[in-house]
Length: 319
Image (tube, rainbow, N blue to C red; front, side, top):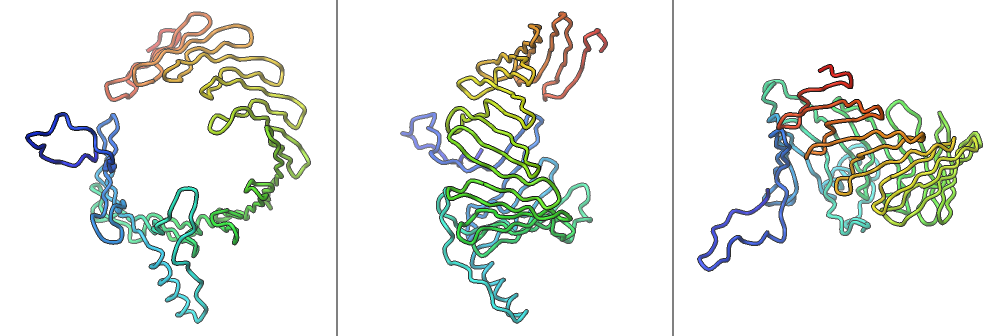
């Protein structure tokens, strides 16, 4: 997908190497359904996805907006209301993801539906508004009702300090100097404080119950290896070199082991605390096709060529 069509030259070696950069144009699943992405070929949104066609033939238009367009819309709205327009920076703050073009998704429209071609919604399925710095500030549903809202730190672009679901109280957050959450305040429920050590996170709720999460590993392989719960009990976990859990010991000291397929990561066997074993088998699509209990009885599942469940056989032999 995304390969440009070209006629090879007479002196060109075949097969040609893959192009260094390919643009995603579609996703196809094993059921034969394809989700197609349409991109603008030129103009201010050139290269950006501006429409999507799903596997059912429905087409959605993605309305995009630039920083300049949002600034002009805010200026007109402020002028009409007789208030001062907020200041919009000409360049967006640089984040860890690199330069920011300022392009944002403004709305999603259903423009074609084969099943109901004459009954398309007059409002977008979803609409989004942004702060002058390009941060998501609100989400509206298909009835144009606000369902989410967000507030950000004035001095730290992108750092969310509050959010609210429609009909619920606002949840607020505080951070330390390194950007880690230290407080989470929920007016209608439990609030939490977070303390950080080199290999532990200490969580205390508003009822003064304390939980400690001990971590192991670094970077993307960091995992919670021990939980000290508020009631004094402890849960421990063991992981392999790939960060996959291979054993867990519960609060009563009972250890359960997990044997994994080296390539797929699927669980092939569970060893219970009393030593009993449950085995699992999978097909080439990594779908579970058989489970064998400690007593030797087996349940089975059969799938068709599209990966859909076609037959199921119980441990007692019933189909």
